[in-house]
Each structure stands twice: as C-alpha cells, then as structure tokens.
Image: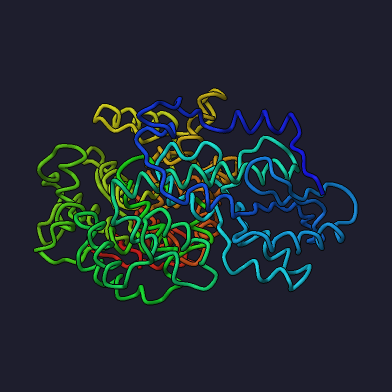
Length: 528
C-alpha cells in the first residue's frame, strides 16, 4: 500500500519540528552544542512507528498507522474492517528491527497481541517514547510535544489521526536522542545508570540499542552502574539510604522506577514534578525518592540529613531564623513550635495546639517547603477564611517564597487557571483552599495529578465547631483525604489555638475514615 502524507499533516509536522540552525562549513550537520553519535540516523531508519486507535468499550482496533521514518511507504488504515490491513502489518513489521510508539508497551502491543499471537515477536525490542521522556526531559518546562500531566499523551492537535501521531513519534524520539547525547557529554554517569537500570529486563533490546548508540558502549557491569548511581546521588541523598537502595537493585523490576527517581532527583529543588502517569504505573519511583531524600538516618555524621532533615536548619534556610520561638515549651522544656515541626517533618499525624501569635503557620510551612524540596510533593492546606489564605500567601512572598498559591471563589477565571496550572505543573509547593473547593471537579482533577505529601487543617477547631451545620463541607474533608490517598495516606497536621478538651476527646479528626487514633502528650496530640 502506497502511503502518502497529506499536505495538512506535512505542514503540521513541520510546525511541530523544532527549528534547526543553518548548516555551516565548520558544522556541516548543522548541530551546535550537540554531537550526534554514529548510528543516530541508522537506528531511526530501522524503526517502524505504530499508532492504534482503539474503541475503549469493545477493545477493538478500528484504525491504525505503521510508518517508517521520513516519507517512506507505510500502512495506514482509517475505515472499515482492519483484518486485512493487520495481516499486511504482520508481514510489514518483518523489515524493521524495532517498533516504536508513544505508550506502545502498555497500549499498542497488548492490543496487537490480542488480535494475533504472531505480533508477540514485536515485544522483543520495542522503544517506547512515553517511557523515555521523563528521563530525557525531567525539567520544567517539559517536552513541548508531550502533555507532562495526566497520562503523558502526545499534543498532536489532531483527533483520531494515527498517521499524524505515528509520524510525530519520530520527532519525539529524535528530540529524546538529542537530549541523551547532550546528557552523555555533561554527565556520562547518568547515562550509564539509565542504560543499566532500563536494559536488564526482558524485552529491552530496543532500549539497549538506543543507549548503546548514544553512549558508544555496551551495557555497564553491576559494579560500574553502582558507582555511577553513587556519583549521581553524592550530596543529593542520605548515604545510608543510598546503600540500602543499592541492595534492592538486583530486582530488575526496580530498574525503571529507580531511573525515574534519579531523573527527578537530578532536577530536585526547582519547580519540576514526576509525571502523574509515572507515579501511577511505577509506584516505587516516588517511594525511592522518599527513601533516599526524606528519610532521616539520624547519623550525626550524615551531611545530607544534617542539612535537609533537621528542623532548625530548615527554619534558618527558609526564613532566616537561627532558632524556634522559645515559648511555649513542653514538659521537657523543648519549644512546642520546634516539636510540632520535627514531628511533621518525620511524617507523623499531628494535632498541634499553640496560642494565637506563637507562629502556627511556621509549623506547616517548614515541613511543606522541606518536603517539596526533597520529594516534589504538594502540601494542601484547608483554611476557613479567604482573608487568612491571602495573608499567609503574602507573608510567604515577603519572605521570598513564591511557591504558595490559593484557590477560592473570589479569583477571576484567569487567576484561577493560573493557580491551577502552577499546581498541575509543579510550580506550587503549598495550596491553600477552603473545604468547599474539594467539591470542585477541576480542583479534584488537579490534585490527582500531584503527589500530596501533607494535609493541613488550619484553624482545625472549625471541623467540630462548623462541621455539622454552618460549614457542612468540613465533614467531607476526612473522607476526601482517605479516598484520594489510597493505601498510604499522607500525614495530617491539624493546627489550632482553641481546641477544647471535649473536641479533642471526641476525635474530631474522624479517626475511622482517616485510619488513625489519637494519644495525648502534653500540649501536642499525636495521631498514630
């Protein structure tokens, strides 16, 4: 079947393709700053890009495209029964070393193998651009052709056009190879680690070929890879935790999760987040980041934990104060503000009762900023008053911190969209909202795209005082936290100055829905 690219698709691909500098005598390939390795064009020429359109109700393929690089002949089926076209595809694939696609491993190949077991041979060496993208483009702004949020799909701008998407995959893969080449020059240990982590399991021949071409070397040995990982994590993670994680890596199932963890750690401390689909499909990735960076080994000689997991050091880093407020104190003379912050940084469920004017906001702001810096997780603050939210955001801005946003009913549509985008794309460390906002479909969708590392109920006495009549949405807060947290709920920090003993004893934090019980320790009520 002769495949001819439509004029509209050709123009769209041209717009999607990044502008290349003009060639010069000194640089005949027209490449500035990146040296394309031998085999760059060769591996693309040996790839066949496949994109399927599948009826989600019947799991039936109704359209597909399989195209080589450039303007070569391919197979495009858009209408009618696909049986004959799929039989041609089976024969057509034999002429190519690798099949490529965007989510080909979890979508296209399973559907093809369901049609015929003969397509199982394609699983020997596929290259999935969806899986590669968080490694090639971990930093915000992300790859311009891929929706970083939600499922990482292509931003094709075309509905149900498998030919366009299949050809767009070549653009994405070419961009990814260029990014890997640049990374290999800047940080060869990173590419060595990726090569080893991603290419030890079954069906990894395609990835192995790609990384081998980029690095100009075969897959590294275990010892070489371990040294590379240790170099990447030097001063970026707790040394004791690095050793513990390395002991887990003989399990090849942790290869891709560890690669994604390393990719995010390489850009940690900014406004970049791990893609939601990575956290959903590779749950160990977020766990590994937390183990490496947000777990205190308590070794006094650990430089990382002394810098990043110490409450007083965090206070000085974010707000410039050398110590916490000296009053009030617990029964051992320890400042309560410090005690609450330390417990929250450890991930404990906590009710902190502090008098008005003694710095309750600091008690959630330091754990929130610290957790965002170490893991990229979002802190959600449930607050009763719009004026209180605005005051806390402005206070952080005055301290030089711009990563807190609020969503409330007084925002204009552009302001609300800007706040939602900051949460979605990873620019927000703290989100302050009223309990009513948890009913919003848009807010719920955006929260689902971020890892929530801490829930805060500011002015927590409102849960009991207002939750039954005046502000009934407060009754929904605990259920929402449980439903959105899965089997590993994020810690809950409740702060108030006016919780009465009967409120505390009644368990206004709804222990059954959240799955916690309370024990009383002086002026701080710990939930375990």
